[in-house]
Image 1 (cartoon, rainbow, N blue to C red):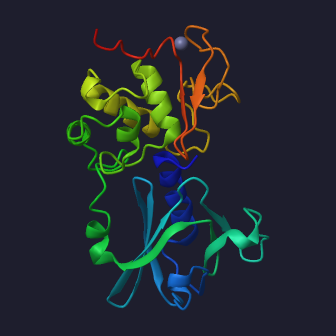
Image 2: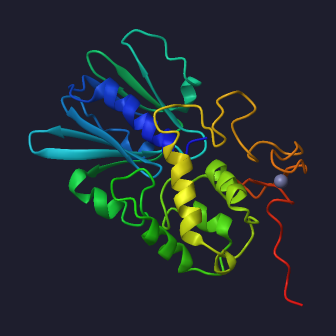
Length: 265
Ligand SMILES: [Zn+2]
């Protein structure tokens, strides 16, 4: 699941494959960039902010940023020239970037845009503090969440305007470890800053590897407390884990460890 850590790792893949080299070819299979050609541009850097990927290229004094978003299903893969592209079906390819030593292929990318690098900040100004960014600020993230007290804590954690980098996996795991029922309104969550700090810790602990674990175990089937474990026994209390599906916003929780708050009498 592409969350902050996956996106950060993907930025490193592109960095190793492309940065420092001149593009010898580009192929954009998205309507808005169909005629764009980045041949001759040098790849200057590869970074991420929340779940947004930022690949910066330059030629002379022209500096551009290729923005892409993985959402639920996107991916970038790097290949050697001549190597078979095995990542995904070809019809999902959205961007191909070639250098003398690498080919980077972007599958099922979303929000593909080429913007002047100078406008990056304003392009992403809606994002809250980046969990994996140098500017990570738990107080600010908690403050932003608290600004909309009627929203459920699940929605608030996913809202990238509050903090950038949490998806369904880390949302579910953070709330389990915090003992908070997923539909609790923000105003009733006892310690927002602690919740936010925990989410950051979980995401950051998976930087640099592709297996996402919140339990500390890298063994298959043991990497999460509740996520992906519908009807399986809670690791703490044995109660069957529950799952709720709302569009893309799937939630898992333990009804015993994360009880629904009692309503007013
Ligand atoms: Zn439990």
